[in-house]
Length: 435
Picture 1 (cartoon, rainbow, N blue to C red):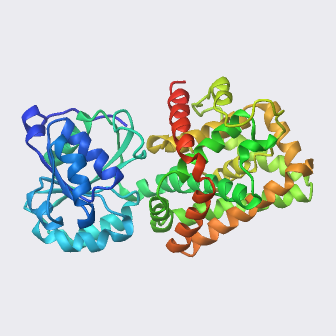
Picture 2: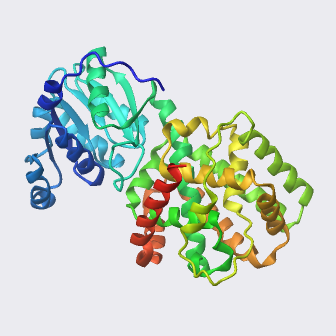
């Protein structure tokens, strides 16, 4: 998207801006620190039991910790609600009434329809709403990362000020005019991406083995799968639960992913080769059409990042998780390359390995033959099939508690390797992003 030219920015304006955070969790702290570093007056609040810890961490950086959300809302020129999505209404209802005329208000949730509904319900009419979504986790600094900016209810000057503010952080700003479009993109780039990797983690847990100990998971694609799965499970369950359950577009896309996986799995166990091939070739020709600008991951980099014993000879893999994703894109008529405007690192990794598989004829042929006829991996594919069904059912029923429980159980299974996986995946992302 084309950046607007700055007409209002001055250094004095940025340094004089009062930015208040209601909620100083991982992402709130990350952006509070970033704004303080460019000279803004930054302050915030969190739960009372966290106050002393936050003061110890943030006061030296010039960030003030205030008594409560009312104190923050009264003082802010730019007020950011950085709380869990399911708690948004309760917190906004408590503090919206004291917002000063002209204050610009944003939410930092990953699903914008419920957020905007709450802000419209409780904020006075004089408040301006310009919300944003950082398309990365707290393991990355804002500089160079995708940040979606949505102007919902604001005049030109207010919008330009917020644009300039994020521009000073050197974020990669993507302007999306409508929060519905944002939620559709996020359903693909985040929710279905997470479900695919969460299902892999669940399948490995249910099978009772770590994938790096299994010869079927020693290739470059598998290195990316494993590290991305560990990366996702290294973060907090509530982030992913809110994304999946509260996004109105997520259920349709997750349901299609589950349907694609189930139908492909049936063709595999019946060894219906012609139907299986025809279905995958249709999906390949749509998703990886010659008009797409390909990502082109570096094969050697993918192979370097392995947690496995190098002495074990790798075995072929069906890559059912990837076949299912490409088939789902085809049936949803989603062009994932269009959604790179709102990409996250895991989404780019997922699209990159899907592209790598489908654009390599020998590797795709190996995957198809393995899926149809190699019984040694059929048990793993059955575990994956069951895991996708479980996650799809949890999301379909809107079961946030069930989502968190399932997530935490898998997280505990991989607990000893999560920190290493997060570090390695961050380096893998950096290397692959470099091209």
